[in-house]
Amino acid sequence: MKSKCSSIPAVILACLIVSLAEKSIAASFSDPTVLSGAWASSSITLNSRGSNETKKILTLEFTEDGTITGTANWALLSGEGGDHVDTETDADTEYLIGSFNPHDGVFFLSETEENGFWQCRAITEDLLHCHKVQPGPKYVSTFVIFERKPR
Image 1: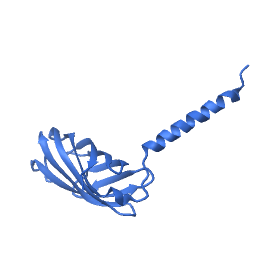
Image 2: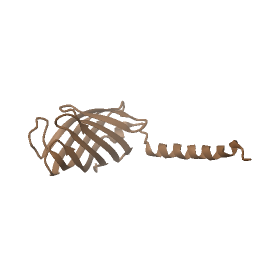
Image 3: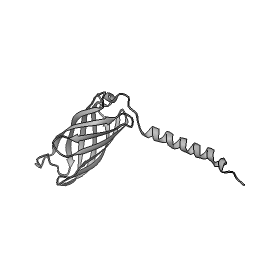
């Protein structure tokens, strides 16, 4: 009869593999300021005017304490867009404030003139994954993969 203990090494090995995989996914940043700079991408966005494609640029300033200030600029590539007073436009700038968790690379950004909310994760010093949602009558939802713009 097989002992229950013979499967313990396999369980320990499996736990170690999962632990290492989780650590490789979650980046750690002892100096958040390395994430300061301009980030660019394009994405499909669903909003109250329909679906559109926009070019997006985040310009962010991270402090050593993990506070963030910056802007999110977008320009239409296709579809319709509007600004914070619901005027139809093909480009706009949102002002942002936020906070950063250096232990897992996650940060949150709040738009200061609308109720837009960003949840982002720094994958590396040159790659961000971000979700933006904005509830209410001028709803917005998108997922964006940003790459650092050359300095």
